[in-house]
Image (cartoon, rainbow, N blue to C red):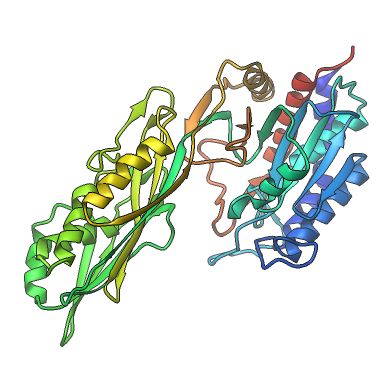
Length: 461
C-alpha cells in the first residue's frame, strides 16, 4: 500500500476538514444541565449528532451511546484499535478577539473554542479514516473512533460507555501531546477541616480550583495594626507581594503570587501559603494560631514535594511527588481547605493517604482523601512502538514516550496511551482566549493517524 498517495489525498481534503471543524466549533458544547437524551446538555448532544452524521457521510458505521458518546467504525468485526477523542469544551471565558464559536481562519491558523482541545484532533481522525476508506486501504482488522462528550468535567461519558461497550485492547487519545505519553502520575485530592473560633482571624480566602496554584489570597485580622504586619512582611523571604488596608476594626491583607497548574506547582508562587506564613508570624489567638501553625509546618511556603507532610517520594520512571495547597477558607469559626497531589508510579492512594491523613489529624484537622492510582503502559510494548514509528515516519523526528503529572482521557483504561496532538514550543491557547490549531497540523495529524492505523491494524497485501 502506498502511504504517499494516502498522504496526498489527505492534503486534498483540507477544505473539507476546515469546513467540518468549523461546523463542530459552532456548537458551544460545554457542560449544561441534563435534558432528556442529552445527559450533558443539548449543545453537546447536537454536536455529537452532527459528528456522527459526518462520519456516516464519510462511509463509517456509527452508533450513538444514548447521547453520552458515539462510535464510528471502519471495517467489520471487533476493532483492533480504538481512538478516543472528545467533543465537549470548556466555556469560552474572557479575552477573545475572535468569535469563539465561529471558526476564523487567518494566516494558516484556525481559531475557535475546541480547535485543539479536542475537536480539531477528532476531525483529523475522521479524515484519516476517510482517506483509508476512499483509497481502499486493505486493513486486516477494524478501527473505531470513540467520541465522548464529558472529558472536561470528569469523564462521566466514559463511565456510562463502559456499562454499554468495551474499549479495544489498543487505545489512544489524541488529547494530549506528541510524541506519546505512556505514564501518568496518580492523583490525590485531599480536603481538611477544623473548628476554629477566633476573635483575631476574621476571614481567610485563597484559591478557587483544586488543580491550580492560587495566585490570590486574602485575610482579615483584628487586634494587630498594619504597621506591625508590614514589619513582619519585610522580614519574610517570599516572592509574593502583599498590600494592606487598615479599617477601624481590622486590617485586610491581600497577597498576589503566580498561578501554575497543580501538576507543576514549582512554576508558581503560592499566594495562599505565603498568607498562611504571614498569619503564623502574627501570632493569632487560639486555636487559630495552632491550626495555622500546623498548616505552615505541613505545607511550608515554597515547598512542593510533600516532604514536611511526610509523603515525599520519587522514582526514575515518573519523577517526584508534587503537592499544591490550593484552597483554604475561614469564616464563621471554621477553616476548610484542599490540596492537589500528583504522585509517581511507586506510590499508592492508600499509602500516601494514610500518611497524609495521620499528619493532618495530628495537626488538629479532619481529613478527607480521595484519589486515583497512576497509569502506566510499558515503553517497550509493541503498541507504543508502533505509534512512535508512525510519528517518526510522518514527521521525521525521533519519538520517545514520556511521563506527565496530569491525567489524560485514557487514564485508567488498560493499555491506553496519549498520542498527540500538541507539540513542544507551540502554545495553542487551550482553555484560553483565541484557541487555535494550525491547518497544516490538522492535515499532519491525519497523516500520523492514518500511518498509525495501518501499522496497528495491519494490511492484506
